[in-house]
Image (cartoon, rainbow, N blue to C red; front, side):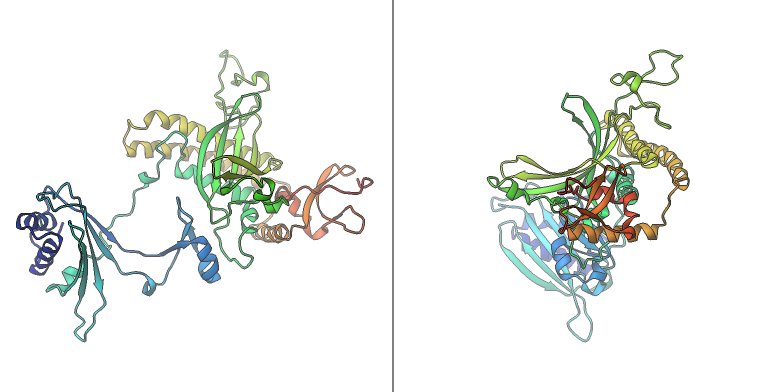
Length: 481
């Protein structure tokens, strides 16, 4: 770990550690050798903890952190915590060295009853000389806790032990999928961009957050996976499903004017919930029954197989996007909440969704035989190959967006997001189908007539991208058409 060429001061610290961990001479020599000698057979597990940001539960973040800081956060996968970017250095905890000695490697005497642990911290100088003090906390092999402070002879060398300069960044291969239903990081990122930028779904999450929040973490996914689901006839469909991170929202029932889940199912105890956003379609591989056929067909849909540009091999029949809310009881039962399937997709958004799901299916089919047989670097190369193909196809989507008859700037869309968030929070706006106009419009209830009234011309643009997020409002006036 430290090497034979370490300074005498470090040798002194190693001997002090060995004596604190156990008093038996042979075992002390074994411990000292494991710390000082690079090629020693028994080595403790060594970790350097050097925080460069702060992590906390999202509820604490919303309650206690200022808006300026909450605006720059990253959600932590696998937990409800978030980290803050650009956390002040003076507020960060000091670096800590952690050593863990496995009892099975050092069990020379009967008194070794448990694993041993050592925590080493650098303290601030306490005197005018500015000498470096090192605090050592030891939990020995026999379970005794000891603490002592050292003043190393070679302060620069001791200080270098706490430096994070030698820590290498985690390799991209750690983001690779390792099971058939997992997707590569780029595929997940493209899925998140689609729901954020194309379907403008972020108001669903923002409306559930504190009204004063200035956070940019509105629509963050905990994971995105590829699965299958069966319809009522048992026919399987491919589903690309993203589960929102808990910090975004875990339930959107209230936004659709639904009662809380515990009131809908009063006899159950609920332990959790989640919100999922999905893209689904047939997803079956197509084949040409004869070489002279103009295009391949789906074994299920035959002549009804749609011909989709850029996707000659996978059936895209019945493509739709869906948002659903699920709740879980204490005995692991699933209770459905909101289910929004009437999400309008124009030709551009429809093709975008199909390209995403088709690319994910191809990537998964290619990677599945590689798991457990190929090296991580090879899996990473295969992921990159499919990502590059998808990126090339999405260039077509960019060109199609430019040819839309109605176009909005990013600033205009962001303003619509804010208006939609405000309306969803109020719970007074909804969508209503007007038979005479043969279209769905945004309305609010009219308490005087018992019917509905238009929100007004200032909300007309919301029909393009945001209308699908609002609950349906039926008129109580039968004469209203």
